[in-house]
Length: 66
Image 1 (cartoon, rainbow, N blue to C red):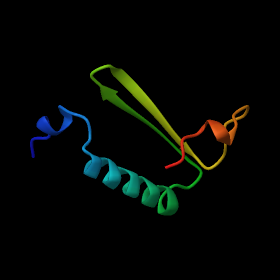
Image 2 (image 1 turned 135 degrees about the vertical axis):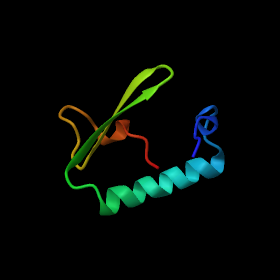
Image 3 (image 1 turned 120 degrees about the vertical axis):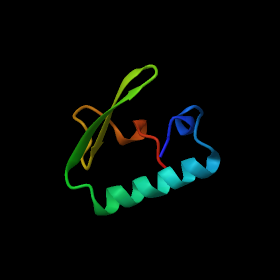
Image 4 (image 1 turned 90 degrees about the horizontal axis):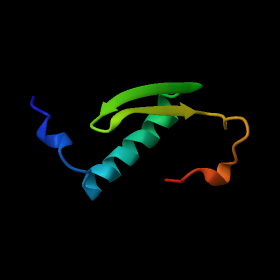
């Protein structure tokens, strides 16, 4: 499957809703203690950290609830 065209634009509202729902499911059923990911983008690498604990020195108020 050619996915090059799919990455040429931002997510639609429907795609974002699906992403959010799948991410919630992943966090509820798959995430153990943490997951650290990296992906390449046209602007350089992006690093993503999922964790069940706040990082030291951070407050939950700084996180965006979805």
